[in-house]
Amino acid sequence: MWYKTDAPQKAQEKLAPEVAVKNFDEINAGLSEAEARFEAQRCLSCGNCFECDGCFGACPENAIIKLGKGNRYKFNMDACTGCAVCYEQCPCHAIEMIPEPINATTNA
Ligand code: SF4
Ligand code: SF4
Image 1 (cartoon, rainbow, N blue to C red):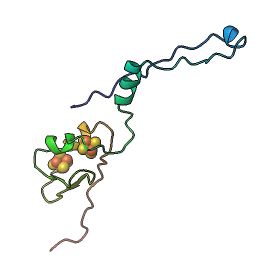
Image 2: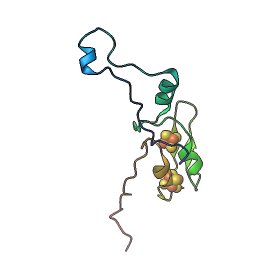
Image 3: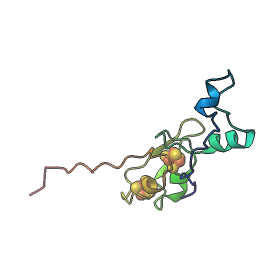
Image 4: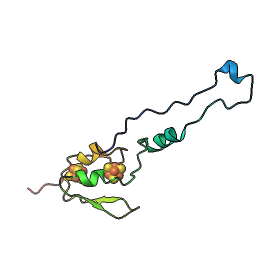
């Protein structure tokens, strides 16, 4: 894995209920700048490709083709062996593996 995605959410300090009911102070204390930066860098595994190049770099068959910034990638299915390395290492689960359709017709 090129990315560490298992990072816990930062907990915010909160006013105790018995204190909160006696004033109008913010109940949630918020995050410090360092904590906010950490939160912003946590991967939420949202399923959207963010063009990290992990699959592109990991594919042993060079079957993944970069389409340029903002255009993501395409897969050369003629070169792909279905090894699932790209799928395994994708930090946000943007790649789905599906069974290859079996051609029912045979040449007898
Ligand atoms: S599909 Fe996953 S591994 Fe590949 S570039 Fe996108 S986020 Fe990275
Ligand atoms: S399944 Fe394997 S060969 Fe196919 S694109 Fe992914 S890493 Fe490359």
